[in-house]
Length: 364
Image 1 (cartoon, rainbow, N blue to C red):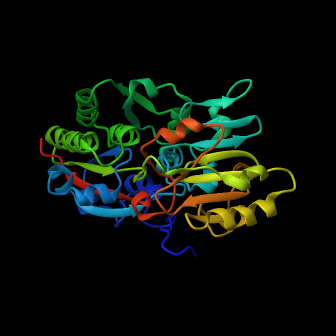
Image 2: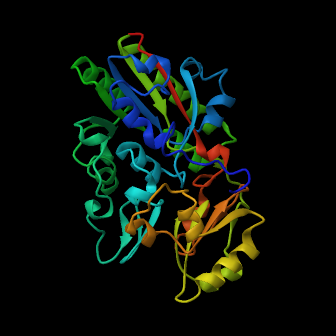
Image 3: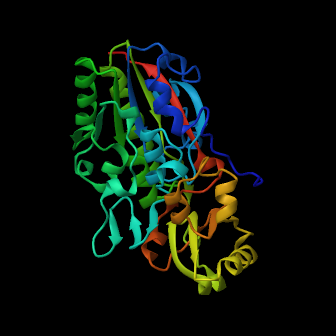
């Protein structure tokens, strides 16, 4: 066990079990009371809105604060690519194999969000993640129009009926119309909190303004949804503020590294041939004051990614993981632009791992 690290939950209340909990009959008893008996459910994912942010701003996030429920743990790593894939498939990362923001494949390191980085061309998304979404049910997905045909959208929810929005009013209207047409479950996604946090950090007016905008979106949805419909709000991860000096070079251990993957706060180090054991020892010596340092075996055998890792998962994770404990990230020499982020996530801290599952009935 890692002291102070938040463990994921893959067999009880947690992000990876949320969609199955909603789609089951009857719905799981750990869901907020207002969602359990509702005729229909709209699940709104506010990317990057960790429980800490919601709880600390209750007095001004009046719509979110009015909802019943509480925090649950997300998956490991606590990052969008992994968490949203677990949310839609209902599987732990160990099963679906999307092991981070950037995943090592035979042809290179694939950026899951942009679907770039592998030469001569990126792989078919269905070869990277083969599992069906939404328990094989036909579910409408309301997301940004530009995401409709992306590789990551295929990974998350291949075959879903996608309704693209270009403005928040359209997101709200799509949800209203789908519920009115009799859809029992609607999945909606809003990336604003995460985007603003990455660009501006968590300590200025831009982030505060974005939290207010997300709260108004929740209010707008509640205002148009009928009483027999529940709005369930969750997130994929929380955030850690990153200062100018938060990004750290790998140091001496970099000489033992063939390539990096993962996220700045959950950095996989893939060792040069024959150097895995030496890399584990050197990484511990160099980085344990800032991070939990795990070998591949510790990461998988202790169940951080879930039970029974698939062969693909075993091949994709690094020989070493640097899971940041302090407010730091580890620079990938092949992706120095990542160090411009003013917030980050991926690791095992409470701020990153706890996300809301809160709900309320429509008031339209």
